[in-house]
Amino acid sequence: DGGITQSPKYLFRKEGQNVTLSCEQNLNHDAMYWYRQDPGQGLRLIYYSQIVNDFQKGDIAEGYSVSREKKESFPLTVTSAQKNPTAFYLCASSSQLASGETQYFGPGTRLLVL
Amino acid sequence: QQQVKQSPQSLIVQKGGISIINCAYENTAFDYFPWYQQFPGKGPALLIAIRPDVSEKKEGRFTISFNKSAKQFSLHIMDSQPGDSATYFCAARFSGNTGKLIFGQGTTLQVKP
Image (cartoon, rainbow over all chains, first blue to last red; front, top):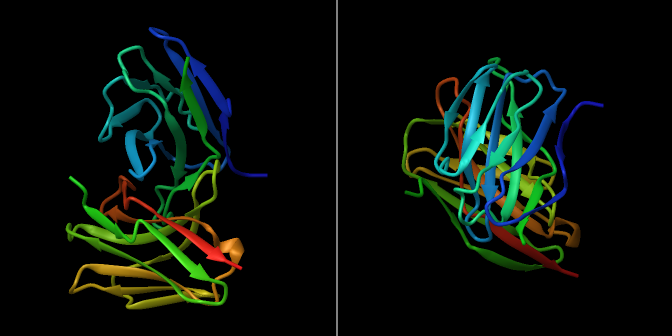
C-alpha cells in the first residue's frame, strides 16, 4: 500500500523546545517537500529535497531545519527560533521522471504551542 | 509576492449548481497547473491538472479551462454535490526539474443540499 505517512498527527511544543516532524514515503519518489499551511494563506514551501543528502530552502525556511539521509525519509525540525510555529504541516513527494507530473501529500501534522 | 492569485476566497452553491473557481498567474515559466481538493484536517489530494498547450480538460464533473494568453485558468464543478464541500487550491509548477509548486490561497466551497 503505497503512500506518504506523517507522524505524529498532533504535536505540542513548549517554549524554547525543538520538535521534529516525521515524513516517510514508499512511492520511490526522489523529491520531497515540506509545506506550512495557515488559514487563508494557502500552502507555503519551507524546504525541499530533490535527492538524498541534498536540500534547498523554500520561501519560509527561517526557524526550520531538515535532513535527507534516506530516500524515503525527510524529517522537519521546528526549532526554538521559529516564533510562530502553530500551523498545519504537510509533507509531499514527487517523481523526478518525465512522467512525474505533480506532488502527492501526506495527511499532515498539526503543531500547537503550549 | 503571490504569483498565483485565486478567487473567490469562499463560495456557496446550491446542490446541482455549477461551482467556478478562478486563478491567474504572472510567471510564464510555469509548465503544469494542478488543482487540489482538501477536506478539513486532511492533506490535499490531486483532483485534476492541465498543461498549457491544452485549452480544456474534463474528468467527470470537473473541468479545467485554460487561457494561456490571459494567464488564467479555472475549475468548473458541474452538478455540485454536498460531498464536494472542501477547500480547493490551484497551483502552478515551475518548469525545470525542481517540481516546485506555487499555490493559490484556496477557495472554501460549500454546497448546500
